[in-house]
Image 1: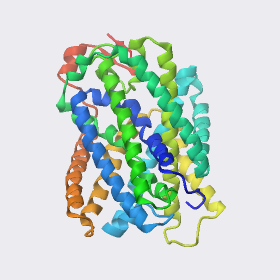
Image 2: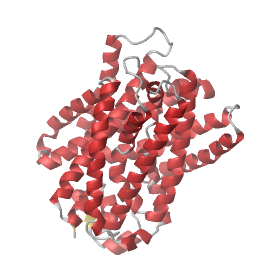
Image 3: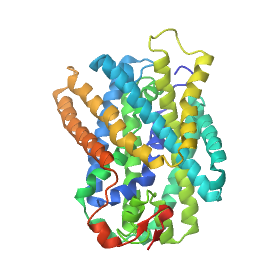
Image 4: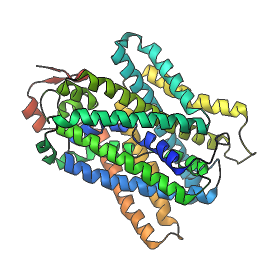
Length: 422
């Protein structure tokens, strides 16, 4: 989009990537990954992290080659796969972006309502949260870099504090458990935690179409986020027992982030306060990145015929309203949509749009090296496995974790807020 400034260094671009990668996905990672255990989680994080890194390289090459401010995914997929792929990308990308923004608004509103005890007036909290997050996302790019760097910096400090407080409670014997039959449950959130690809064209433009600088930013951003996700997952699995009160299985069945049972086990108000800030900061940075991506996506749709040098102010205002009003309305109507939106967006939408389709482009493009195309075949297989298993899990609904769940938890009835009834 033409109103964004350019010339930021790779490190600032990496900061925006980190802000997106440590968004809402990290809040649920320890629970979803903890169900299958630390060793399977590590292997899956490496494999599907590599898949998302590969697809980022594919999309970065295409963006740099075109050097178009309005370049976006529908036009790219249409070029290689035909007109049907354009409309498939439009629908899928819209579902992903609107779903993620809705999840972020809903999640942040719920955190604030729970913290203040204001669940009764949540209908007033949602619009305020939506307005604040939207204003952050529509700033010019230099301002976004400035405030995003501040958010990411404080988020990393809060994250370090959470690790420091939870590390003494880790039982390293719990890290040795492996339950491979539940491994597919973790894939959607791993993919979601590695997703920033909507903003790749904008980031390339911000770096003056320098592919080498873009690679540095992507590798740096993804490496930092991977380390944070891994450490946080390790602390969650090591701190929480697998069964019983404040356990991994209980948190999973109750759709709770790891911070809730961890706060109960640590019995620390400081941990709870820092965890709340960490959650809100992660959501804010992720909303900024995806909000920019959605505006760029809508801009591409509005200027699909490549008419004129840029957008008028009226068009910009329309794009902003179209990007941020619908998620706010949906979050207001469906306040409990947070977890479900992440599962659908990651397991189906992100895997398809940023896993399968980029791999197909890499395979079909003849001037790619044979090694690069072979890697595309390998990662395409990984993406297809993720899509099939995620679709199956969504169709079947949340598993009962039988027989171990019924054996270990007996007649307990699971409810929200991490409590149980006998």
